[in-house]
Amino acid sequence: MAGIEISRRTGNLRRAQIGAATAVLLSLAAGGWTPAAASGPNIVAQWNKIAEDTVVATGAPQIEGFVYMSYTQTAVYDALVAIDGTYQSFGPAFAAPAGASRDAAVVEAASETLAFYIPSSAGSVGAARTTSLAAIPDGQAKADGIAVGHQAAANIIALRTGDGRQLPIGSTSSFPTKTPGPGVWRLTPPYLAPQTPWVGVMKPFVLPTADRFLPPPPPSLSSPEWVAGVAEIKAMGQDTSTQRTAAETATAKFWTANAIRQDNRLARDIASARSLGLLDTARLAAMVMVTDADAGIAVLNAKYHYLFWRPVTAIDPSSVTADGFGPVPGFDDGNAATVEQQGWRPLIVTPNHPEYPAAHGTITSSIDEVLTQFLGTTRIDIDIHGFDPNGAAGNLDAVHHFAKANDLRREIIGARLWAGLHYRFSSEAGIDLGRSVAKYDLKHAFQPLR
Image (cartoon, rainbow, N blue to C red; front, top):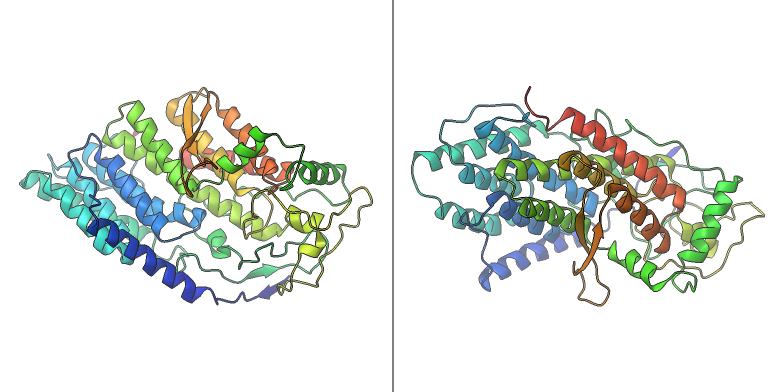
């Protein structure tokens, strides 16, 4: 395998986007946006929403965004563990002074971590911190809570120093490539630079290595599984497919919602519906984000390891452009049992990273395992908010209910197939990967103290 250095011509654009995002946050504050205050029923949920808004405003790709959310949520979790005990600390354990304010600890842990990792948010996050702390009575408890939050944030920052995080947010990087040929990934329309290959070699949060659960290789291009996979997605995933139902189309679009917003909203909704206390809310949010981040790191590691081609490249070799990864047009798969189709395009624009395994399958399966363990049942009985194509851009207005954990896994497999993004075998491999990552993470972190 040879190495190739991907151009960073998007760097200036990314910096401009980050600056614009900061301006949006500040303009919201100027226009009457009020940061969450401590007077609400759950300060952890309030600061989870502030963190979500802050991370999404940077324009971070979703898996990279999970990493930033994990920094914040583990600091909040550790601050409350220091006060209440009950569970294992994520970072170095430390004892809080008796009577330390939980609310103040949450505010300080979240705000310090966000401001450190996203300096462009310091103004808006600082304003939210001031508002939240003003609602807490002054005194020793408040001062001690702030000190606890500060220590928790400092511990997480020290623990994650040198973890492989790369700046600017959203930047690409070099990665080992394969000799061009059938089955090898190429850039897909609209030909964006490869998405954050460096995340796949980051230090995970709990997993010992990013490749701890590396899936087996995708099927051979001469195999019946490959032929069946191509035929299915060619028929069901095309933008103009007449075989896909209206409900299937809507489901495919439902799962184009921003996963950072989807997963954090789900955690907050569960906390609210079940009247969770601060520590349990913090534990759930940290479990969701850390397993999402580790599953994301693992799936990007696998994607850039196998570098398997996307459906649009396999079905329409003429979709390939001069991307520096091989000749134009692309390659035929060499299998007489498959038929290429010039002009074939997926229902949903293909993300700018390799095919196998499916990232959404991995992340969704990971959160499914978290909910199963946290709720103590496979009958999870949850509502997930997603994109409604009849609403405004970026909305979470549609709601899907899932009675059982496997209902959610089945839907994401179908959704990515109907979107034209992933062969069925890619999503199935992602389901297995996400479940394995979450089981490992939850066995080795967030456990009750014995």
